[in-house]
Length: 498
View 1 (cartoon, one colour):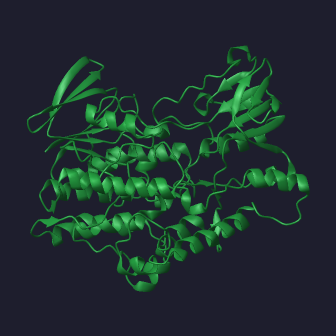
View 2: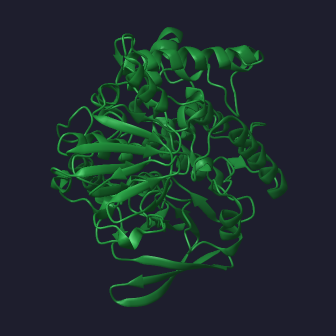
View 3: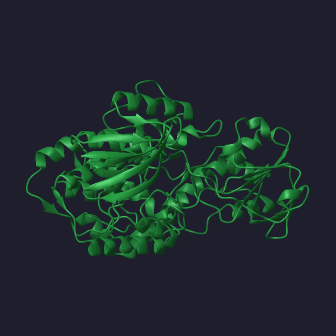
């Protein structure tokens, strides 16, 4: 097939190189002048949340030395190296404006440096990132009167913007936490405003880096999940106490390791720390941010003043909060994340779904829309093993395209997506991209895809290392070849919702 891949970030690159193994011809369309997706739009000093050893294509390791948590420059360099290594056809400054169904495929409408044109493809894979579109606008009373600067993290090219200033950072995602700590080193005062606190994860647990702990099955097995494909997991999750006890234990360990829970605090410090302590369990949060070393100690000693409130307006030199607080400020950073990606080029059926669902369109196997054929999504199964997750999903897609996996009816697929949607809404906190997260249920999710391809889901050499050992991208490097060897008569999908 000739396949259009929309987006040349890491998901698009991983998708294209995987589909090329099946003999397909992929063309990647990137609307900007550079590849890299969100990594081409970063702010100063940002680093990868994950460790570099867990962030690479399964059969292409980093070709140069990198930090434990690589810088944005290092990640971009890797993405460029991978694109060159796999000799991908990438068209820069090609903005997909629309898609039209034609017999046996799609017509893709493109704005290019040479003008508008149409191209025909047999299949389309959407790999447009969740965090590369426009930031939401915050319109509040008095904003035009404010004499200071109101910016987003994307507007910051030099951290000197904080020097000697009274800074207010709004939000509790990774960018908000980064901005709060970056400002701490430079600003006169730092206030952190958020509606609800989120769990910040420690760098180490039980003496090991958290990436090694959280990637082992011993960490993921006890998570409550919308799917438990293994017999042992199904057995232990028959008792609700399994998941609740696990969540309570992990929450206690996170508080201890991050310093969120610490003895000897005075009453004011305790009150500040209470404001940044989440009310939900740690497993109800689909995405996590590493706690910077300075964040919780600075909450405790008052160098960062937390406010559990929302902004209601501005005066000439004040930020007004919903709890009645007025904060004198020179710089306000609105690090309030992103809404649900709108992807206006998509068919109307999917755009209607996006408009209906505030947490994202519901996808079968986190890849396929039940009502739209010849279209798939790559990277909409986000998890700590994001790149291997894309590769396994695209191998599954390749198997489905050549007839090895037989899909159920559209009605059955839609019913399955609703079960996953309802589980996430009942058991996890809201995110505008909640439907696109697999999170720390990645073993459960990937196991289903591997089993449907006839590939062994357990990837370690023995049961002990399978349970306790840290997973790495290399564990999934042989999936394509294993699928080829196991390929036989077409198989229906397994009776799991994911």
